[in-house]
Length: 230
Image (cartoon, rainbow, N blue to C red):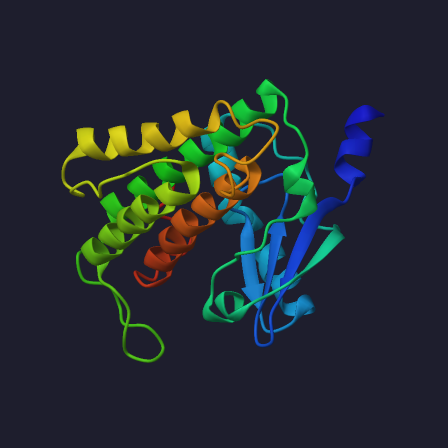
């Protein structure tokens, strides 16, 4: 009976609503976040991304409830900003400000680590030159990797860190860069990671979203959706 209730429970989601774009984020599953032109489109995109996100959950060694994408419970609607319309989920949900048990911090961290692993796997299987986007643009593979690392270095100011962007071909430096981010989460179970900084749940959601958004873009632009991650 317990397993059945787990299957039937709706997945809590927050919607960040801008003037031109809406982001839907599964609050218990950082990185599972998609956007659309309206609420319905964002939720449809979130459901469609579930098979891809399953790869992340499996990599983390966690159970993913059956039917998790069949029913969403919109628990919060957040006002968006120009950043939302630009393409960045930038609002912190009230759900993300709740105190966290150590076990939950470890779970969230495992999902972030898995997101990085999936990204690295996708990059390793992709060609250096990617198919152009719908408007004839888009970064190629190596520039995409540098962009992700550069963004994470910039996130340091929200985490109480000073991060120098590592060279993408220096595996030890990239690993140390990621470990610094993870270590910043340890004391932040009941407040922001730093004063006036990001709350832990939002930080993990934002970082994992950015990593997976570009991993999935690389796959799409190699015409191998979902395949390079496995």
